[in-house]
Image (cartoon, rainbow, N blue to C red; front, side, top):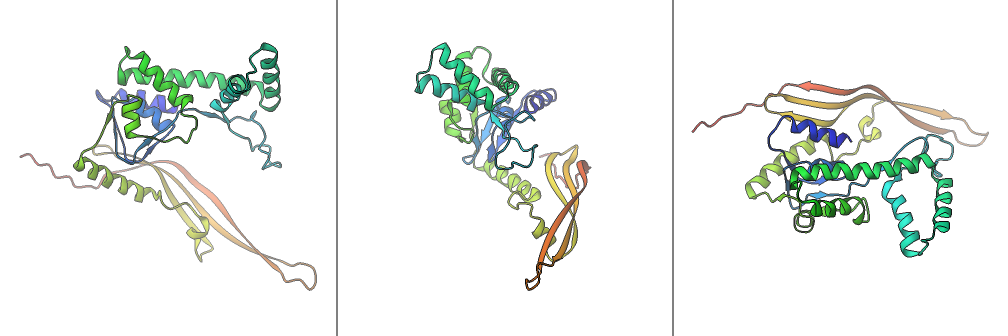
Length: 285
């Protein structure tokens, strides 16, 4: 629903809405792309399925973390649907009694309220996708829209399925544009700059951040919203890393154990505004 809200917000400030995808626009990124008038995809760009997963306190306990009651397993909407598809289509369990037993057994593993939310979420994501596609393809293209929604929600088979440019254009029928060489160089330059600024290729590692130091402040830029007139709004996480070393004496005759822990103290998390300091040259010729 965040993606749906973003599309509607953007639409209030423009007459034409285009999405440019340099790399991955999966899940919610795909939903935003469906709401655009046009999607420009590089040869590396991919869309993905939009089947959601539910997280709630009623989800099944994660067996790998038995001592943490807060550790829950996400429930995939399409996995529940796939379970019933397996029973009916592969195992041919189609009579009411068998389906009743399957539902009762499933409700012992997954809370009934979670199963209800699964159904609501599946219906909601299909409704959102249809509404967005009507703006891109037209309200009279219901057959094409139904085909796209079915593929993105279930027929793709896996949430990790990658939809490249040719498939998005030729098989699904989305409004896809291929950048020319000049456009591609501009897109790549902007993407490389954002990648470096957000350090997308550098996983946050407290040990590397600290190095030989015992304490260090850090600031991670996580989201960028930029415009020529409005400057830059950046979502940042700031905190302090504190390394503590403790020596634990064992039984007599055994060498002591040195244990090192790193505490991450969060100092700030939120949006900050930065003014642009870029000099722009306007060619009026």
